[in-house]
Length: 278
Image (cartoon, rainbow, N blue to C red; front, side, top):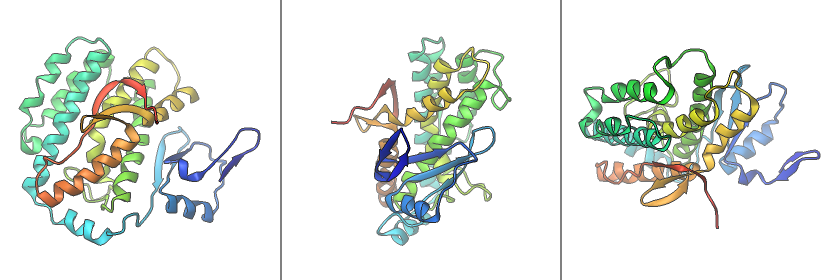
């Protein structure tokens, strides 16, 4: 149990992702071990409140070695086709984000979906991103600059990255072995691959909550963490972002077994709505 005096007591099993923002938080090794047992991802933040590390279970699947052999045995053509599907869904979600925010140019961005080839050899993803961010945040916006909008994007992406990493780890995958991301210094390559279609959800939140703001505040960070509970459409049904990561991870096992990207279940952006559990 986690206890906070005069606030709340809740079962640890109900927490999927725990974000620790304060450097004053002290955790025991037994608490971290318990988090690993129940599958809770623990994210720690730097002085700017940006998540910089994640504690994930080392063995969360009963057939860990079998899943990892399956993953490592995938072919380059298969991974390229999976990346094509991921980028097509990402661009589709970017276009939908623009449409939901009533920005012009959404159909032009959507038109780029069919131009993405296997492996995205023409780097349509990059071209779409440049046009998308210009339409979303205005012509003066520069991705990577030190400002409020970029702080919000970085924070939201990091939270989603932790959730995706948690799901993939729980299904037995080696996170360092990506589909497209292959940086030897990046321990989360596979999580970064499957993060791509979810990024527009953070973009939507930042565009609605941080546009015109001068500082990145605590309430903004709380709002960005809450996107884990927003609805997305996956496999024809509404699921929370958090659950969609599990569904995508499970579908990747089927894709690897069938040596085809067809079984992949990737999230589609919906109008923001917190998932209601029955």
